[in-house]
Image 1: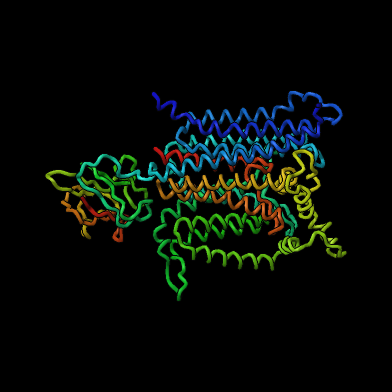
Image 2 (image 1 turned 90 degrees about the vertical axis):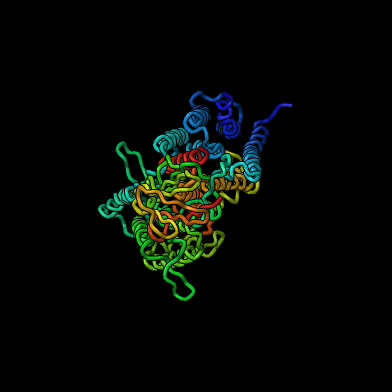
Amino acid sequence: MDLQLDQFLFILRIVLVALIYLFLIQLIFVVRRDLVRMSSGAGTARVGTTATKGLGVLIVVKPGPMPLRPGHRIEMEPVTTIGRGPTNTIVLEDSRISSEHTKLTFHDRQWWVEDMGSRNKTFLNGSQVPTGQAVPARPGDLLVLGPMDGVVTFKFGV
Amino acid sequence: MIQGIRRYRWRELQLLILPALFMLTGMTMLILVDSNSQKVSLPTLDSLVPAIGLIGALLGMHILLTILVPQADQVLFPIAGLLSALGVLMALRLGPSLNPPVKDLGSKQLLWLLLGLLACLLTILFTRRGLLFLSRYKYTFAAFGILLVGISVVRVFTSHINFDSPTHDELNLPGGIPFQPSELLKICLVIFFAAYVAENREILGEGGPRLGFISAPPLKQFGPLLLMLGVAMVLFVTLRELGLALLIFGIFLSMLYLGSGRILYVIWGVVLFAGGALVCYKLFTYVQARVTVVGIDCNSTDPVTRQIILGPAYQICQGLIAIGSGGVFGTGLGLGSPTNVPAVQTDYVFAAVSEEFGLLGVMALLGIYIMLIHRGFRIAARAKTAFNQLLAGGLTAVFAIQTMIIIAGNLKLMPLTGIPLPFITYGGSSLIANYIIIGLLLRISATEST
């Protein structure tokens, strides 16, 4: 049987709309797969899943403008730097945070907090941390970065 | 290493197959419809250029994306690709039957698409060191955007255009290329809002002085935002682009909500906008005319109403007739007569699509827009910094609000305003601006996973 032009056009018409639907279905499958993978926990925990060194954690108390959640635990390294610059261990992108803001070091079985000459200062339990001089910190201490009211607040924990 | 193969964007390639097939099928259909129904002759070679060119462009872009940003989101570009393919198809189909006919509308649209893809690549290249520098230059972007539109404002006031007629903010670049600065203004404003809200997010979230149960936003942080917005609104009221004012206000409110999470801002904003709209309605007769048109019954036999239907409401009624004659299944690409609608290739491309693809096709199209928006917000949700989150959210809101405004306008649900339907409407500046947005979103999604 010969195919008439209008019959062929009719088929093409259906195919054309069907193609949009197929594309939509393909998209939904891709998105579904993504959602399943996300809910199984692959993409959620970015910070703090590195091998536990057991040195201690920083618990986010007040996240400020950062996409951190209160209660989030960030594993500390023996030398942990906080600042706006991309080379820091913990990068906080906020104009009130200096590019190198605070340094935390672990030695003599204790954490030491040091201000790196930041513009808006670092505060430990409400008192200003002097620049270039390390102050000891214990678990439970509150570490505040930024001006007096603070941009971000962390708590030392184990 | 296996890493190299794994980093190849297989999913994007898979998702590009259907847009390519869609383009080929549509093109075949157009050629068959065009050719005399008595005998089907083989098409000339240059009539194949748009289809082959589009598929080539999509593939080329795919390869370049693999080289430049292998970690970026793989779903976004195929969606934009399918929508642009539909845009090129519609331009190909509408061009020759326009009055006067524009034979090369399709190839022009393809050329714009290529320029758009180039703009997308340039955006990705410029932001390879991260997007933070965008937030540092927030006031520069704001000033640049205002300057762009300021040029058209000056033009309007110097060229004695009738003060009550709607004017378009169109500039003619050297070489007679029309260019709409407002398209770039959108992006500039989103960057500015994102940077500003990200910086003051905490304060905005806390709320300001309370007045009974209503809490007003903190004035000091809010001032510059309101000022920017005021400037933008004034520009557009003088330019008669009320749709753009609505779009900008919508972006502003959604970003404020994204940044602060406080619904009160949105309520305040809607109240303010309603007030502003009322003032505009009272002041400008052309606004009144547009609102009256929405209330018109296109089937009316009343002689006064008929006068309006043949006059100011002609376009909107023809648009509705086009949508209605499509029915559920549509007339088929190239088989309808959407060119009865004035300005169908720009303002009424949605009506043309729904005439020829029917309700079924339009539903699928809306589904694809929803997926685009879902993808954009997903990128926003996964972004690392507040600025990136707000930027991605705001840029996605641009797509969402634009689609909503123009489709509602086409369906006579609200006054029609000349807002382009993303990726489908014929026009260079909007296509380029949309691809710049895609470039920014791709870059944000690439930085998220490093």
